[in-house]
Image 1 (cartoon, helix red, strand yellow):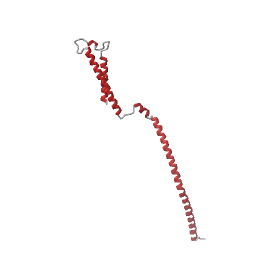
Image 2: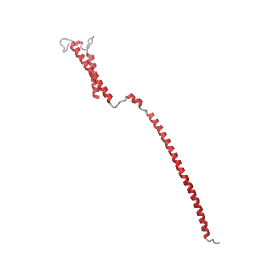
Image 3: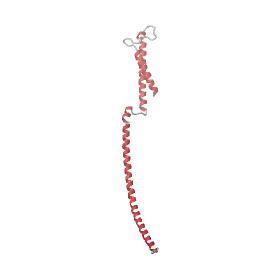
Image 4: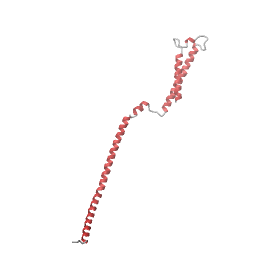
Length: 156
């Protein structure tokens, strides 16, 4: 594609030069060279410049069409302006990330609260069972202590 762009620039420069050199009604650059001993006569020079202009104009159009075809087939389908409007600014991205982070933190807090409640619900029966067993053990220890006291003679 770069070759075609360089070729386009060369064609444009040559086309402008040929147009500027052509003879006008007020005798352009070639008006002074219409002496009988010159290489080309005035009419031949005009025909040469006309043909050269036509050839360069055709080359310009063909090259422009080739560049347009290559541009349409390239991977970059969106224009720079479209991309600029579609891209989010840094502030918008930061705000969106902050919002997503808040949502995730709230979800984690909800999950932590549910886990806390589940643990509490599972521990409560265990606590009651431990208290019950503890009081039963305490009672058994007191009974055994009383029993042992009765077995040991007291010295009075």
